[in-house]
Length: 189
Image (cartoon, rainbow, N blue to C red; front, side, top):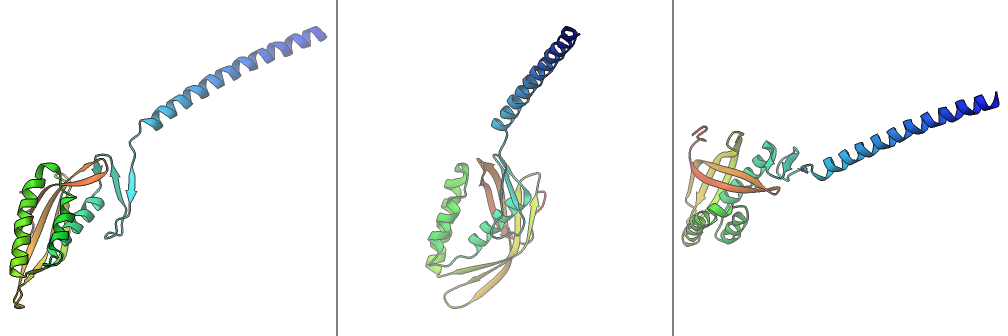
């Protein structure tokens, strides 16, 4: 009877050992899959911008509406609030955000504007009124009022829209298109 009990225990231990081996192999396979998934996953970066109270989420090649809208508002505010004293700083700051494909053309235009601002002793003040985002084109429309004051104190106020096209490269928003015009935004054009 002792041999029979020992044989049953041995057979049970053998079955338990086989089941535990299968569990170890399954655990190893799950760990390998998890490691591969972790290594090749796309990182998501969440940032709370200073001029927007919502979270902004960036991936390696895209950003959500909140992120691009905050960058558009920042850029429009930067371009719209210029004095002879800060014109060079503004041009340099905008240059860091431009994509290489448009850098030369945009900086040439900004350089011309800086020269006019310094020569005419002009002060620009932009008051944003609305920010709209077109998801299909990754374009931000910043609408507001631009006041231009010359050295004599003569002021001119006009409605102005900044239209800013974005692309995201390595988590960094880049301006790939930039225009400004009088009046309301031209959606869908």
